[in-house]
Length: 379
Ligand SMILES: Cc1cc2nc3c(=O)[nH]c(=O)nc-3n(C[C@H](O)[C@H](O)[C@H](O)COP(=O)(O)OP(=O)(O)OC[C@H]3O[C@@H](n4cnc5c(N)ncnc54)[C@H](O)[C@@H]3O)c2cc1C
Figure 1: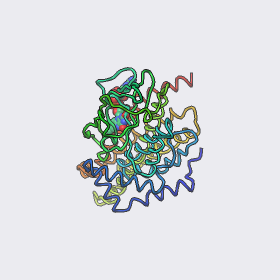
Figure 2: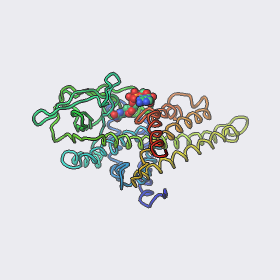
Figure 3: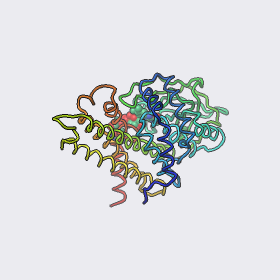
Figure 4: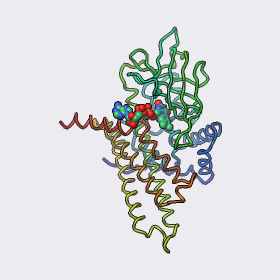
């Protein structure tokens, strides 16, 4: 294991930080309150900037042989700068494009992948079925072949980028198998629901979608695939992205708490001089370093196809998600009344912090899978 950044990794970090000058940071602030049109424009502009420095093409995600650590070097910076932009970008460049790369590759999917790398396209992936619709397969949508088209029916909950996506990958059942329909909004019968209001990450647009007898040409359907590999790929990729979202959020939060504790004075000295504040900062740094190392170890294990990689990704996600909640809470305590005011960075971080534990593989499901793996390996 060697977690030192290579020259290329350092370069991508430097180029990434270089994009975000003062005017870009203001633009990012606007993302948090933007309406859908503005949100789409801002996200598209940043995708183009990120494409120009090669960020959208680095690393295919947690795939064997891929430069997962190089990718994480960049992800850490972007997640630290803006959690919302990070999620919108990673859903496009790693989750949506990763799915197409792994299960499509050429033809229609190939053209879309090129558009993603140029920063010309916002992608979304629809997997989660609505609660009221639960059945054993867990996909909430079915498709059947009718001539040269698949016909798709169903509903999906929570689609990140849903209302602003140029292209959606929708997972459906074809009898017992899984297929991925790659469609553009505007297709007859495809209804993109209104934007959902969320607790945190307010600069990301999320919606439900509904499919009513949507006809998708066969050339735009990947599969059917007889095993659960698309779901396994998605869970791993998504969980690693959410881990890095937590790592970035923790770093942003600590930087703000550190700054505030030096500037704000009580009892005649900066609050940093009070032991109670110092202890909190020390604990926050410990949680930050541990989350970061666990994330890198999980990423490295993915890139060398270690048989425990999936377990380690879950461990990293659970740890980083819960660490980000603890760090956000301690930071709020340090900033006290100022931190509690709506609209400041601590208050936003406190709301964002809950997301990673409930999205992707929830902490409960992750712990169950970790325990299953532990019992299988060490009996
Ligand atoms: C803002 C946001 C964006 C999202 N974006 C996307 C997206 O782009 N695409 C997409 O497909 N999905 C997306 N999701 C969905 C997300 O991945 C799911 O919310 C997540 O997987 C949890 O599923 P659920 O909400 O249905 O919870 P449930 O699965 O219903 O879980 C409810 C509770 O029960 C527990 N639980 C569930 N099953 C078990 C079990 N077997 N044993 C023990 N405990 C269990 C869970 O841990 C949780 O505490 C998004 C969600 C949010 C909130």
